[in-house]
Image (cartoon, rainbow, N blue to C red; front, top):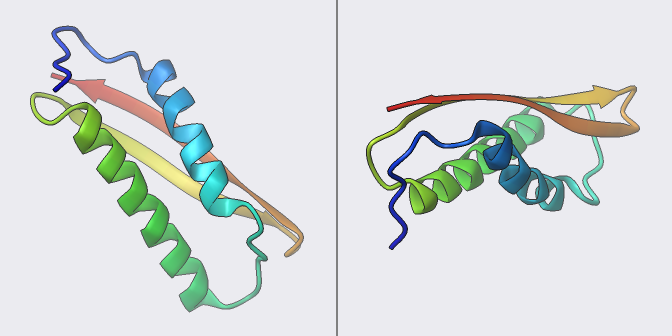
Length: 86
């Protein structure tokens, strides 16, 4: 079990979350199906939550704002901002 005695480095946290999100978005086609898009957002949210709970099981509060941005249905990217406190 890993215990963090200092405030988490949010840039390091973003570096850990980036590959996780990229793997989830690789090969995904962006269509105008709102239900599928919302399901993809939920899956990414669950993955991020699981990673955070594994790394920081207690003692910190995180606010992660994520948004999938699509470009004319051709490609997408995940924009994320992170902040944390104890």
